[in-house]
Figure 1 (cartoon, helix red, strand yellow):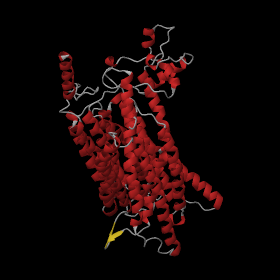
Figure 2: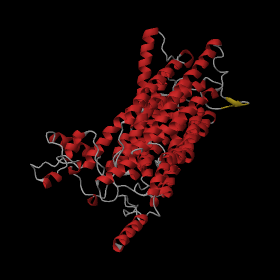
Figure 3: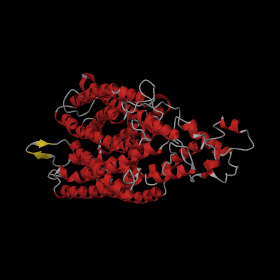
Length: 592
């Protein structure tokens, strides 16, 4: 007994000293827990995220203004251009995440994509500084040069490509700095996503205030130069943190094992299920060091046939061919991805509401009185700062006040489940659209009463409630989605998991553009007057906001049903695997 006790104590001491989660340090060795990872590494990573968000929101929030004032696109075309760019920017991470997980590794992907991002910023700066690439030779352009337009769009889509590798890899790389099997580090990881978004929002806040102010009052070129220098500096800082990081090796395409499960299940479609799921094939826990094993679940049972040992064939031959036999873990990983599809689809309407904040909400601000004191007038895009403030308040309140209270009340280490957190944010999105519709109705009433003055007598701070509410909603839903897609994907797909989260916003931008086109076509044909005319005063954005409120409310009901029937990832404990082990893990994850 003493020998067993001594062995257990030595294992515990070893686990406290070393990180045994298949990660390595910068020299390819097992990481030392005390000198790698956790916050000492994450701070370097949050710095470059701050820089990227500063650049992104400094450009994104004023993009519709640049397209209408400098490129001279009409409102509808400019809104579509912004949505297309935002859509590409948030769908590119699917490719970047795949490359990071399968081939390049997360650190290398972040570094390469950050350099591409920097090249985009340099090209954007050149398009506003080099005389032959500038919009025109005067301060006010009535018709910009074609070459400027081409270089401008090339630059912002280079930034999209950079974001495609940067966003999914960096956030998952940051979360990799925390060991899931270490209780203290697991708790810190839950806070990581909150403080990651705090840093993100600080970048956003400066982007839509300081950078937008420079664009509005100094020059677009000066703003781009600042962003370029900040990004270059943050890349240097990110590389300087290399000795402190924990790294995960690329494991090859994560899609191939899923295809193998499908093929094996189809091949064995006529086999009978074993009476006990424990008879399904799984490799012993002692033989795997690269990933955690998953417990069997009863959903999508057809896929379980891939893990049935065929008694008519040699078992060793089957085990050597993954196209004929899959482990329970591989089957469960495919189930995880399939189960995510309904969640992904039901969060798109939330993303559509978020898309309005960077397009129509900003454009509304242009028509309102933006004076604060005396002759100081805030740039239209700076009103977006209120969304960042709402998110910062929401995340800080949740992490420091609400989560500890809920932990004590529910006994759940997360406070509330991930899907519950996402659902709360969706309620805020419905409220946002209702408030936005009422405010736009008030603005239009002023325009109709006094067509000459329009809505210039109405303060821009009438838009504050809708920005604050959507920001608070982001603090619940967007942070929840990040945690959900990182935590619930297979361990080999975590960069892709963050890409799935970003693709919700990307797909929502494309759906928003499609919805604008459909509504424009229907309203123009039915009444002869579109809801989206050439300017806001002749448009009916209030009707469009009411439509989005109804769509989002109906979708929320569907989401609740989907969330109630969702099964969370069920991971085996570190000890020898047993049915009890799975049951204990199931209890831990029941409210995850």
